[in-house]
Length: 291
Image (tube, rainbow, N blue to C red; front, top):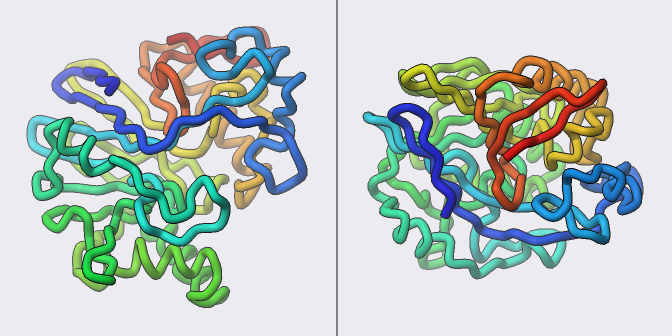
């Protein structure tokens, strides 16, 4: 497991799935513009973030943030046993909980869970299946949901019914947390601990947030899905087909890159495979990720 230190805070990467996949494709796909030939043209991506064939290396992982006073899980991946669209996510059986234990993070020791947004691969381990019921995986934690994100997700789930894909995600991974009384609804710029604050980064979803961690003069930021892959630093105009507002996501990404480029900030990509964390540097009219 990769571990980074930011002052008095440690951040551990806990992988659920890591794979390489061809990108590019029709509108609505993950990165429609990232055709293999376009990816290969960004020479610094290979081999850490892309294969020689131009396929993107992608990771689904949680980030375990330990401050002097708080244990916070940022994003909870896909989860086991959950019926999902597509074979990659459907009814997984991974070692996520065993790996969590191996990292020294027993479920009862977690004090907070933050979802940067409420998509399928960020909420899955909010709950686990026990005796046919979806119950909170972290029974002693507060689950921090952005108020705007939750309201929009709840509305969409109800509009599409619980039989739909979005409705099923809400029903098995979000609603049980609310019913258990563990949900805390927060503003998009909330301060969760002295070292942890949220940064509004809308576009992928209306209430999407990134996470800023500051301690002892050091700073890190967890991206969430304002970028799915480092190729979007070289090509900030490449938006995901999963973005609810592609124009807004482009603007948010450009603003984020301008803000953190050429600074000591450690940028930790929520879906970045390989080394996952590094620094952004300007390169002409675009940017490069250096690990």
